[in-house]
Amino acid sequence: MAKAIPMNRAICVAVILSLVLASCNTTKFTMHDFSLLPTQVVKLVNADSIQRTAANAVRLSGPSMVGLRGQRYTELLFSTEIIRSTAEPIVVQFRTTPFDDSVHKYRGVMLVLSADSTTLFNGPDTTTYYTPLPIGKPFLFEVRQDASWFDLVIHHTRLGHQRTALPLTEWVLIGLPRRGSILVGDPEFNF
Image 1 (spheres, rainbow, N blue to C red):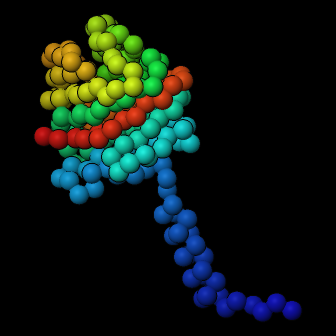
Image 2: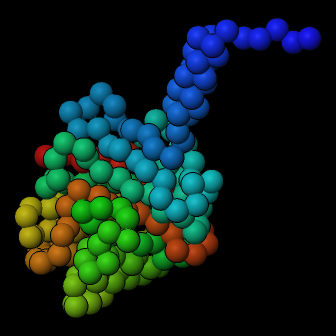
Image 3: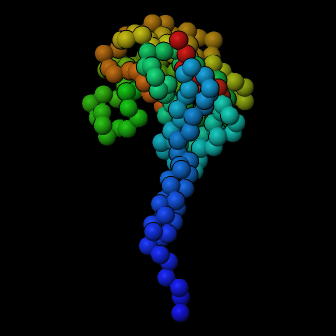
């Protein structure tokens, strides 16, 4: 005959087990923990295809998407280096939330980085820029946000000041809609 576990002990075991399982969340982590502005990273699409490869880098294999944000401030300079393995398009989006279902009307500002061009979707406006991007070597991606104005630098090309009426700040989403892989290195929010 099995010995019964006292009720208090059973409750303690259940509480400890639930705390341990809850702390094993692998879809969110923080980079630059000890900086003034740590970077929160959230795996949004196909979490199994996203790997943290270093203390300050994450690899995406398509299709997948991560969301990045600086938790304390929203109008900042965001910069990262991206290394692409193929010429597959990369989608970058600026939003107030990472979840599509909460902002159907406001898609935010979206960029599609292809092999030799970048297409900017800003509300009803669409503009394409010549931005040849290397394969297998890092290139700089940088956006400076200031209220309804933002400025973009992609590799060696400055796209200039842009104005938007859409909610723009807080989240930077980076994704691969199809195949390929990219390494997003040292994503950082700064003043």
